[in-house]
Length: 254
Image (cartoon, rainbow, N blue to C red; front, top):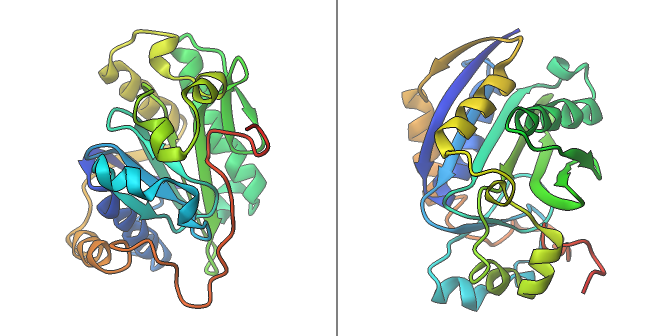
């Protein structure tokens, strides 16, 4: 299977989710190849799951600290995205992973585990979609299988932790963040360029891939989605919101 690689760029929270959505549509319609994309966030941001109650995060603190909130098209819990973190998305027909969601999660997360190993950091996959180092989460991931058989998975690799902002946004204590979360900088002082190159190498290893830019159609569609679907954290009519808890902390840990 041939793959398309979209090199790392920085966008707003709404635009990042809109681009993933636009890529999903183009892959589903056969206009573009299965796609691996890397991206950064324009300033600290927080994303919440498709069915998550936004009241679980501190909305007032987000407004005060100018931290935008965006609702993902995937499920799961709230994630704080530091502007220095590394984020990826993989969008491909589920047949690329032997028609198995579990296999897709495992394969893609193992690309991250392998990249961390290449950077001298031992990690492991837990709870299907969490990557941990010494029992602390360093990467959270979320996925969704669409009705047309296209699989979308995206996740964040934590580069550094803002112990002042993250706890306020996620309504947790600094002590609990330190207990449950870790970052690349806490284990290895490798520069960001090398980290990114290592991630690219492990995500594209043994694949026939070509670096390309987003198509004009995708950019137009993403710009439209960013202004409409991803400009609000209100859920679609009829969607039952659930209390999920923050991504970095196990439920019941408080």
